[in-house]
Length: 120
Image 1: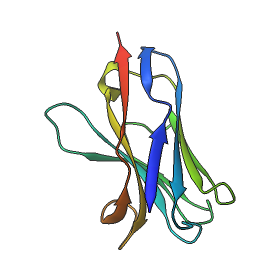
Image 2 (image 1 turned 45 degrees about the vertical axis):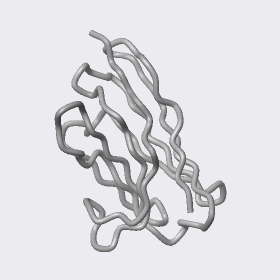
Image 3 (image 1 turned 60 degrees about the vertical axis):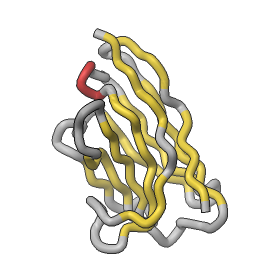
Image 4 (image 1 turned 180 degrees about the vertical axis):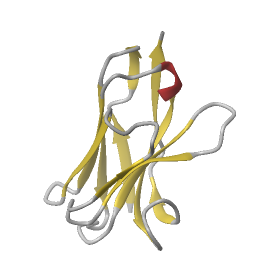
């Protein structure tokens, strides 16, 4: 099972990026998926999650109204559209799948991460 993130990069404050995560090895069509991030010197934190059918989404307060999570169960992908990026959004972003309980933690599968750097 593999989760591979893409779409990270360097962007100016106020700009946008779209992260994608492609899953292979099994289908996650019946599992919630999420995005987390870890900034230098900080703990990894929850960013967003989406239920198996996309019916519900969850966001950290810090990204509400700026980030949108979506998924495509046919393509076995999950995406994170990020707008109005700020310097404190700079972090390595991780895709995760199949949480044991809830959507905020306890994921069984993780990607390697993609770097997002927002310059001010």
